[in-house]
Amino acid sequence: MPVSDAPSITLFEAFFRQFVRHGKALIASPADLMNPLLFFFMVVTLFPIGLGPDPGRLSQMAPGILWVVALLASLMVSGKLFASDFEDGSLEQLCLAPHPLAILALAEVLAHWLGTGLLLALMSPFFAVLVGLPMQALPVLVVSLLLGSLCLTLIGAVGSALTVSIRRGGLLLSLIIMPLHVPVLIFGSAAVVEATRGGNTLSWLALLAALVLLSLALAPLAIGAALRISLDNG
Amino acid sequence: MHFDSLAAVMHMEGHGIYVWPAYGITLVLLSWLLWAPAQRLRKRKRWIIAEAHRHAASDEFESVPQSGRVLAAEKDSMEGSS
Amino acid sequence: MWSFIHKLGSPPWFFRFSGSLVRWLLPLTLALLVVGAVWGLLVAPADFRQGNSYRIIYIHVPSAVVALAGYYVMALAGAISLIWRIKMADIAMKAAAPVGAALTAVALMTGAIWGKPTWGTWWVWDARITSMLILLFLYLGVVALFEAYDNKAAAARACAVLSLVGTVNIPIIYKSVDWWYSLHQPASIKFTGESAIDVSMLYPLLLMITAFYGLFTAAVLMNMRSDLIWHHRDAAWVRQWTGLK
Image (tube, rainbow over all chains, first blue to last red):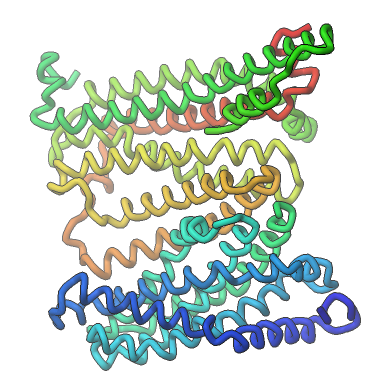
């Protein structure tokens, strides 16, 4: 843990090291990168099976399907965000570090997002084809998922920080975080719906961007406070 | 007064079957909201008194068997649903 | 003023104070509820469009209003507990959550029953009902999180963080659900009778809203009292109150 024993490093360096450390951990385990994509793939497959193969109806529902599945995938992975840090004790060291916990946690969240949300957004056109999303909506889908998944990851990280000390906290995490994800789902799917209609997508994407900025500003504070509380409980 | 008779009040021109159950459900839930904490307060008060008597008894006779597990279980049931 | 606030943090003082407060608040609230219900059910005129089914408004709107306000009360208590580490605020927050959840459930159920004669179905994904449902989920999340923690002091602070995050979110949720509704269903079904409500219908409504606020306060205080004596069961003032020695 270079962060705590070298108090002379600047905040930016600490942030960067934390970011790199988590990025490396993600790359070291390809399963962690692949599983969300696999999950996305499989759940998207369930919809034609459950709803019937009618291409017209599927393509009409495609924006909603893709966004709901992306939200679920984000929920599935955010539970693991702080789990290993909590178990191996590096979270306690982070708390003792001379830099604000909120900033260091943000580095972890961003690294986590690069490995999950970003990847998922970039791969989403392939899954969109499966449910027949009109081609002209693909760019908007990618952009909305890029913005939206960052937001989902930040909010999910608050839930993860709150439930990391609880055994079998995965379901609980979904329960407390799902209602907070509603605005993201609404703005994101609305943008894609408007794109299929050829309507005004920019306002919805701007709203998503506003949510990203708001959660970038506020979520780290909540994450920092929640991590300290979890350490008290554990 | 809007209605002429008790039957008219119950019937409400066909809407009685919606209005009265809505008020009924509300009445039940609101009563529970007030009754539950009152009941809990009474239960906990009784427990505190009983506990004090148990302590007094065990102070008098050193070897009174105190079933700790029963006590703990009873205490857990007090913590719950609050 | 400051001494009053300091006294609020003292368990024995608060217990005595809340006891005498509940003693007059509870009968007053119940009287208001009875008067408001009789007024709304029997005296107020029928709505010219919805007939008598609109009388559900006298429980639906008050419970919805107080449920939403209750979330802010809970979050405010949470903020106080996080900033000043006041134990009383923890207890208040924990006491408010189930009461708020129950009132949200009342609003949802009465709304569903009201929907049947008005819209022809029990459930419509109306913007306001959807927001109310999400509010219920927010409340239930706080309750579930509290139950899941072993260390109850940590649980209270975790719930405080969650309810503050929820408070930031509530206006966004309400606004986004509004937009979502207008995007998908362009004004085909509109809530009637909200813009201009007649005074003869408004007065009982205001009375009921006041009564529901009183009821919320009384229920929260009673919850707090039952928790207070449990937390301080070994303290002298609790033993004195139970009549021991």
